Image (cartoon, rainbow, N blue to C red):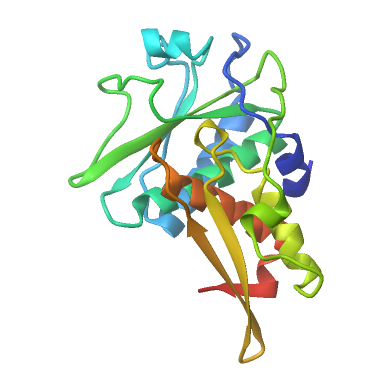
Length: 228
């Protein structure tokens, strides 16, 4: 499965089979985590065979089951931490999909279990990502149109529309999709694109924007443009 295929196939899954991750899969995930921690200046950690984090009443209400493996998304508290958490966390979500796994971003449905993770001075946990072999492959949800979240039209480049289409398949908190993309034009022979977060009483819009930007890059081809 390619990353583009993973974008199209991936849906949130909260119920998992009681099946541990193989050593090969764990190594693939940990190798990618090491790379992303260095690139994104984060402290992402994979926790395996730990059933307590998703056994709270809130998790049960959210229909989490057998969520015994998860990724702790943490980093030093900065203004752009949420966006980096979303951007690099989605790298792992889509990698997991290519490995035959399923995932679910969890902002509130987990509880922190002592001695399962490590935080350095100034670091905070933002979200967990449940990961494992899903009982199902999840279901798709209604999404906005390209026109609702961008200025794509008949004269904007085709790659820009493809990027927006990929972004619309990105997971967002309660499927709110509070983001937008604007094709600016060209400067010094480079296409310029601006991404913006919207307003939401639910929150998580900066994180959602980071996730959507990664999807956009995959759909559009990162070589075609630069962010402004």
